[in-house]
Length: 207
Image (cartoon, rainbow, N blue to C red; front, side, top):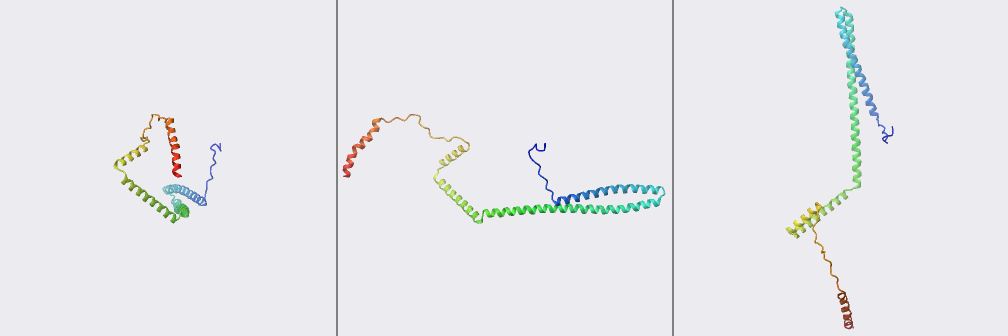
């Protein structure tokens, strides 16, 4: 079943930065779990201190509140540690984005250098000159045609262009369907006899 699709999955590329971000997030999550657990415990101890006061056990209630105060301070430190971890994660992630941007700029710069090596400024100027010459040549042809063709010719040209564009057949002169009359044998032999008759006269003049 592993080769049903005929393709093996590519291994995921995990960088050291990715590992660092993962570890920081795991530490952050553990601190949040600790923070939540301590908060629930403090709420229970506050209710217990209130019950001790109602029972007249002031000393025990005071000791319990001192413990609660100490744990409140730990919660404040935990909150600061969570904020520091989140800030570090954001800094690393932003650094990764900056590195990708720099890599993209480097690739683009190398591409531009390669293109400049393939086509120099002289080549660009030559192509632009040739293009300008072609445009000028076409303009001259348009001017000559504009003076040589009549309005009727212009309309005929446009009609032919429209017919070609729409795939229609352009009307051509009809081919004669009647057979061409054959030349009699006597008519074919007449030029030969005339040529043979005139040949001695030309020889005498040449002599």
